[in-house]
Image (cartoon, rainbow, N blue to C red; front, side):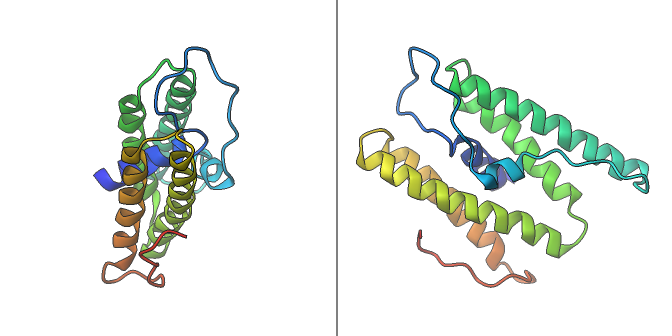
Length: 165
């Protein structure tokens, strides 16, 4: 689950990585479609049993808390560890809601797209001196963790590449 925590944090930070905290609040960066989809609350359905309804409620609370922590991070009010902490909860909530292996695969496939995008973006920022090598390596580790999950026996998806795109 620690891999999920790292992955989700990287999702949230795709819209802007900084080597150091800003002295003034930056304009709110746009989030990618994958990040927006990942942070979308889940509607309760009339046929949900009490456990499923509570899982959705927990997911939505975690997503909102993550939004607040990410906003604080972009304003320089939160450090990344606060985002990591909540991201772990969101990642687990998404996986808990997946009722079948195929749904879990879909969560991991979504994460793979985002981590590949994030790694490429950080490489570009690193080349411009706007991100650290540690940030790039952290993104690479997140992508690799998702790829490993997708390669585990019993997964329905195709094997991902081991190279960034």
